[in-house]
Image (cartoon, rainbow over all chains, first blue to last red; front, side, top):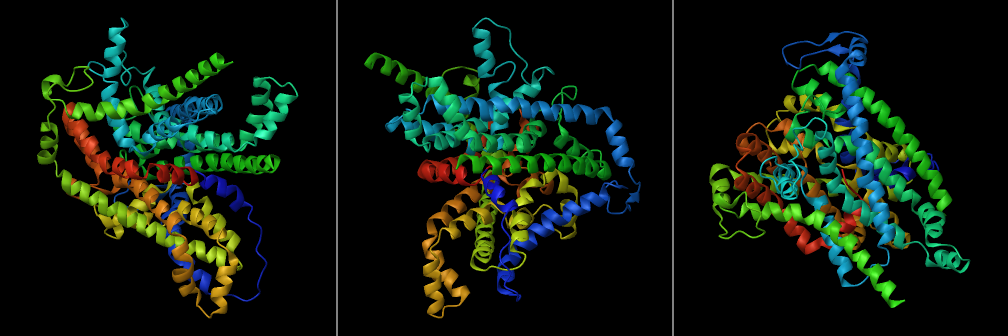
Length: 311
Length: 272
């Protein structure tokens, strides 16, 4: 998570003073990590870039055929791609209340919480974070089952008609958003509570003496000081929200009903390992990587600025 | 005054209680369903009238569940150990020496999380199949033997380490290798251990790479075992919940003992 925090530092790490002569020792220590990252992340990234200009069905016996920009051209005109991109945006937008907005509100509203119960709450609301995604998929599939699920039985008991949480194309995407967010909400709350509790009480006390209202204190003191953490969580949501929902799409809906839950990451998976059009998958991957990479750099730049402002 | 105060306290507890219930009821419902006999599966009672382990017996005989759990344990332990080790060495290099290229290395390590797995999956898959790693536990471990978050977390831990101690070791003529193992390591046990636990949990819950690599139940890790089980017997709710509970128990066990450390290390380093 705070990978990203370190990132803000790393990206702009000051150039270390040159010693002039080359020392082999640090490179030996770095070798294991660097080799693995290179072989399994950076090299494949370059290869995916190349592959995006080829047509290939992934069979070892066939040779990739160079097609220039065709993969990109086809992708950009495909309605599937449009739907996947639009859904990707909905996943991210839908996650925001769960991963940022509600946690901010809860962290501020419950800041006076103390005593032995506080640790119990903390331990409980964190649990979804360590539950495996596929387990979360299975247990929500059961809870939300149309006929016998706990949720629908309660809904029916209250006199409403049952909801096809995973069957109704209007609802299915939001159901998956909820599952993704269920894992994050407690984690985000704890992270924001921790940040909120480090705010120097002298600030809020001084403001109160000056006659500031509760809301003014929140708006003018707490929110600005929480901004780096809020930005961090927002960035995580934007960059990874749609990726996190992949497991639920793959395990529960397969992108359906009527393509209503597919997203760009699932589309890449379908192209790659179901319809075996590796070139299309790679082209979609390069577009995604470029788009999210640009967003990430903007976010990191913003975070650096805000971090300075905080001091 | 006191009345308003208690009202506010009640509201605070109310909010936290709702969040806690949202988090825990689904997990509780999973466990409780797994203990219900077939004729009670659809009932809403919060405790089964006649609790039974028959669902567990079904899962343990119908699936090579113990084998799968064992595979997962080996895979997670190996991945966690490797990540801690490679992270330790890399972080040591980045803090102990000032050398040309260290800024670039730091950035490359740090930015590796930006590359979505779905982008690199096809070349990775091709490489794994060339190396004969398909359908093997080794294949699950090798690509994850180094992780950016491990390097970065340890880098921060190293930076907090007093320079004077390292300097003193050098004065005594200790080599950088000995300094690492005999001076630094004993003082970094706590961050290393919490990183190890975090890496173990992340590896245990890993889904995507095993999904690509694993073909047979005998070689499966538990996430893929669950996925296959769901595809085959999706409406055997009791058995499904028993399998899901078994898959979660080891992690919940760790969490029960180490919850404070686990929360801390997640907040410091990492959802992936």
